[in-house]
Image 1: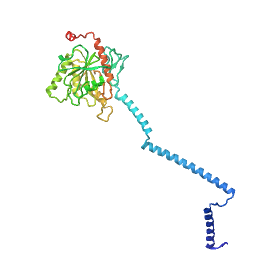
Image 2 (image 1 turned 90 degrees about the vertical axis):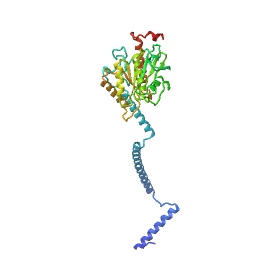
Image 3 (image 1 turned 45 degrees about the vertical axis):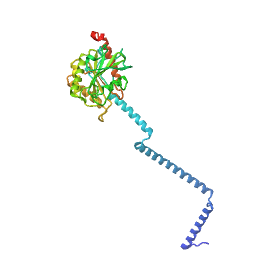
Image 4 (image 1 turned 180 degrees about the horizontal axis):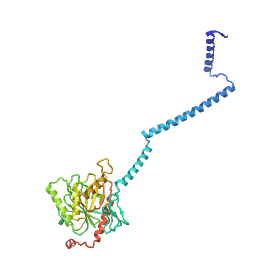
Length: 356
C-alpha cells in the first residue's frame, strides 16, 4: 500500500526501508546488487585503499624523519654518543699533541744540542722540550735503582767518581715523585704532602753506574728559618764543590704562575757556571679552564729568565708524574750528558776520590 501525499506517506516509506535494512543486518544478508555494481564497488574500494596507504606511508616517513632528527639533537643514541665521543677524543688528542706538547719555532740560541754537536742535522727534537737528541751509547732506561745513603754535607757524600744528577726545586714541587716515576718505583724516594720533607742529601745509585741525588727544597717549608738557611748553604756548597756533578735538574711547578725565586735560582746556577736543566713538573694539572695553561706558564718563565739577564736559555722539558709525560725524554737527555761526561778528556778525579 502506498500513499503519495503528505508527510504521512514519506514517514511510511522511510519506516519500511529502515525496517528492511535492519532485518537484513540482523540476518546477515546483504542487499542484492548487480555484478556490474559489485565490480565497480571493488574497484572504488581498492583505489581508496591505495590512496590511504600511500598517504599514511608518506606521513609516517615524514614523522619518523622529524622525530629522529629531534631525538638526535636532544637524546642521541648510545652508538651516536660513542661515535661523537671518539671523534671528540681524537680531536682533543690531536689538539693537545699539536698545542700542549709542541714547542714553538725557537731561535738558534733557544735550543739545546747534545754536547759536541755543532748543528741539528741528523738529530731530532724531543716533544715538550727544546732538546735535540741523537744516538747514545749509554742506556736511556733504568733497570735497577737503590738508595745508598743520606749526607748532611759534601764530605759525607759517596765516593767512587760516578756521575751524578741532582734534583732541586721549591718545596713540594715534586722532586721525590719525579724520581720514583723515572725509576718506576713507588717508594724509592720518600714523598710527603708536607713541604720540606727532604732535609739531607739523598743518593740513589742507578744501574750501579750513576747517581740520582735528591736535595732539600727551597722556599716555603715547615721548618725554622735557621734550618732552611743551612739547607740552602750545604746544597749550594754541593753545587760548587762536588766534582762528579754532571748536571742540576732545577724543577719548576708549571701548574702555577712563574715564581721569581725559581728564576733567581736559575740565574745563580748560570752565574756560577753550574750546568743545569729546567724540568717543569705537574704539566697535567689545570688550575684554570685554559688547557694550555701549563705551556703558557713555561713560556712566561723562559721570558722571566731573559728578564733576569740569563744569556742562553738552558735545556728544558715538560713532565708529569701522572701520565709520564716527558719522563722518557728526560732519561734520553741524561744519557747524552753521561756520554759527554765520559768523553771529556779534561776531566780528572782527585786521587782521594779514586782511592776511596
